[in-house]
Image 1 (tube, rainbow, N blue to C red):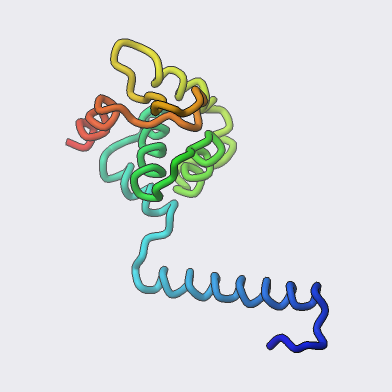
Image 2 (cartoon, rainbow, N blue to C red; image 1 turned 90 degrees about the vertical axis):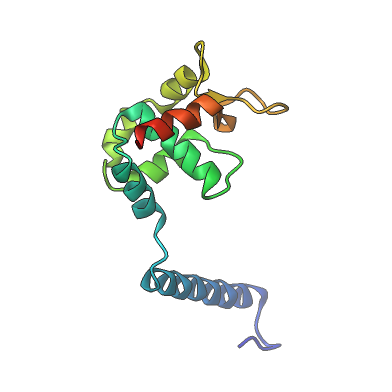
Length: 142
């Protein structure tokens, strides 16, 4: 309830609180209705497909972020966040992985698993799976 007597700051505060309460309520409803939480959904995916090698987990995280969450930009910090949210590894473990090095290796080679889309900067955050990368994940799930 916003009134004409409210100041700018108090109105913003009320809106911020109402928004946060609505987000929390929606999250609770989603979880109760069976909509998977981001980290547990990713963990279920990698566990079901037997993906546990670091490079494969990173590749799977990029594919998940791009195909499920429709992200167009997947910086290493977002990949790390998703992997940590899976609760299969803790943040300290993931810090030791050197995600950028793994991504660079998947961009190189005779049959790269990642590539840069045309028109995008050659930065790790823009790497997308090649057909070989998708096939690699598909073969792991067999």
